[in-house]
Every structure is written in structure tokens, then in C-alpha cells.
Length: 496
Image (tube, rainbow, N blue to C red; front, top):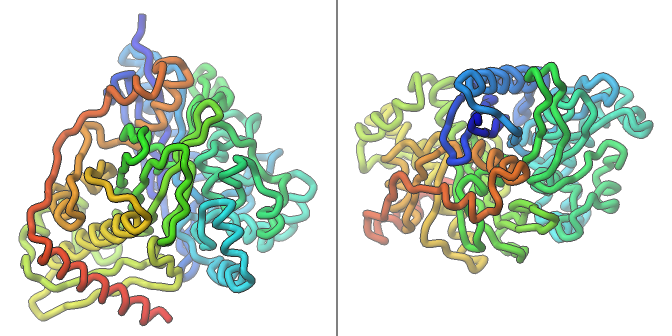
């Protein structure tokens, strides 16, 4: 008997990855490919849907071949994706009408401001758990329908499909036969009522999105159809789907109310499992769907930071201070520990708890002695400061975690993890398997395939690779955080 495995397709903001996992979460095969970022105007961020599809297909096929050539059998596919990123395509041809508008994109700031001024914030937050912000999908869909010639008329005729990236990939993988999403991705559109677990007619009307373009909403572990036979040489069922942060929450086995994880990828996202109870944040955090299994919804409280690993990419690609992310751990140790340099990486606005789409990045405290080591240190610290802001907001909402599980590319940096633990004054646990986003998608597909019998089965896989505990005094930490708050205030003042 061949050992049964799951192929996880992890379609991220800067790259597409495919990873094959065994039942025990052992990685059998990996393939990854970056694709271009498109910046047509200030605050606009787009992706070519064909680049997303081609890199997703290429990496999935490569990982599939490698695993099966090693003697393993892939029995199902799990998909996880960059959330909120929006595509609209023709149902008959499968071709996108416009580039995918990325979650970081701020072009609909004015639309959101108008809706806020018209008094719609409370309705949107009550129904969706989200704030009125360009981050979410609804205004992006409407923008495409209004700015591509003939698009709205085509939509009204039923010729167009809208989807977040999971839906787009499912459509392509099934040769257009399935137009579906899962409850976690639906909950990030501002069109889905997380109480009723259905698309909401009032929200559709508010944002100007016709119901005809919407995908079917399924459980996170569910049957999403089979791949076209020519893709992998045989049909393979797609059995699990979740947005990247929810998938990471599952990959970290945060299945109990109070469990919390923070993912450090392009952005940083802290997600706290609140069980069957939806918490209404008083501090600009988001209420969202953590996962939906067997028709039962588990909720989460989330804080979203737009720029985390993207700031390191900026150091590498735009200002060219480093040639690889690995250099940051060496450089940060060379920096003056008392350096006062502060970076507020508001390159595409500020996320939670500020929600200022107009803010732009700023650096403070530079002296003649400031060099690239100090700028690298400020970049890494900025991610920790932003995380501290989120946990402080959660505490004000009545939740104060004692242990934070971390994952994502940045958490390999020991210096940053130690600094994070000290700044938050909580223990930080790094898992053995750090590819938790892909792993979460694999767990969902494995659950639906019967590879796992329950979430307790899945939880048995989680192992801590290293824990970090706070080191500095409370006074020193508070002094640093006070300087950070001043830097954020100055950044916001400049953006007005």
C-alpha cells in the first residue's frame, strides 16, 4: 500500500507554492515560484491572474510528480490563498476581465469614505464583522464592474463570475465546472453575513454587486469537485479550502477558544479563536469566520497588519540594502542596540487598530551614525511593535493571551522572535513545521478525505520547535512602545 498524502496549493501574495504532506505533517515535496507585483498608481496593487494560474499550476504539478515518483499517493488537494484579492472572469472562457486587485490595494478609499460618511459603517460591521475599508473585496468587485467597459451589463446577464483567488483556482482546476468558495474567504468580502452564513441582499445592494456573480459558499472541509484529468494525469478531488490566515490557524491547531496565532508573511495577521461566540470588537479588530466544519461556524477575532515581510522585501528590492532576507538576522545583531531609528511601514496605509488607508511609510530618529544595520533593526522592530498594538487592542476587548503561536517566513529569525516575546510580554512558541498555512489546507482536505477522524486527531501533530520568553524590564518595553506611538502619530499627521 502506498502512503496516502495531501497536496496543498498555497497561493500567496508574492509567490505560489505547493507542498505535499503525509498524515503526520511530514513534508514530502515542495515547489515555489514568485510572480510580478504590478503597481499602476500610488496605492494600487495588482496581479496578473494568468501569472497566478500558471505559477499555481506549475508548482502543483511539480510537487505532485515529485511525491508520486517517491512512491506516495496523493488522495486530495487543499487550497489556501491570499484573502480579499479579487478577480472577475468570464464564465464561458475563464478569462479574467481585469487584473486581480490585491488585498493591499487602496484605490477604493474614497468609496469607503463616502459609505462611512453616509452612515453605513454600523450595518456593515454588524453583518460582516468587518470595517468599511478598501482592504476587503466588495468595493474591488464594484470597481471592476464600473471601470471595465461592458462589465456590469455582462454581469447582469449572468456571464461573469467573481471570486477570491481560491474560487478562481477552483474554476480553473475543474475546467470551469465549479464556482465555489468557503466560508472563511466569503467572510472577507464584506458581502457575506457571518451570522446567517449567507450572501446578504442588503450588502449586495449597498456595494452594487449583482448576486449573479457570486460563488456557492461551502464548509472549509467539503467537496469542491475534481480536477480536470489532464492536469495531474487523473482526477484528484479538491476537499479543503480556507483563506491563508484561517488555514494557518488550523495548521497551528488553534481549535480551542482562546488559542491564538500570529502569521508573519507579506503582512502580519493575529487570529484568536473565540469558539462559537462572535466577539464585537470595540477596538477596531475584525470578527471573522475561523472555519466552518459540518455546518458549524467557529469565529475568530483578528488584527490585520498590511506590511510585515513586505518591508523586508522593500529593503531587498527597492532600497537594495540586503540581497536576501537571511541577512537581516546578521545585520540586526550588528546594529547599535540603543539606536533610535523607527520605521512606520505604512506603504499601503495602516491596518488594525488604526485603519488609516491614507497613511504612507515614514522613518524617524535618523542620525549621521545610522546605517543599514540600524534601518534593518527598525524594520524588524516595526513588525513587533505592530503586533503589540494588536494584542493591546485584544486585551481591551477582554482577551489577554499568555502564549502566542507564530509562523510564516519571518519567524525563522531568532532575534526577532526574542524581541517579539519581550515586547509583548508573552511566551512565543515556534512550531516544528513552520509551513502552517499550507499545512492547514492539507489538514482540511485530509479531514474531508477521512485521513483524520477529528480535529483532535490533527492536534496530535503539533510540536513546538522553540519557545521564547520575555527578557527586558517592563519600563524599558513601555519606553520603546511610547516612542513607537509617537512615530505612528507623526506618520498619521503627515498623511492628513
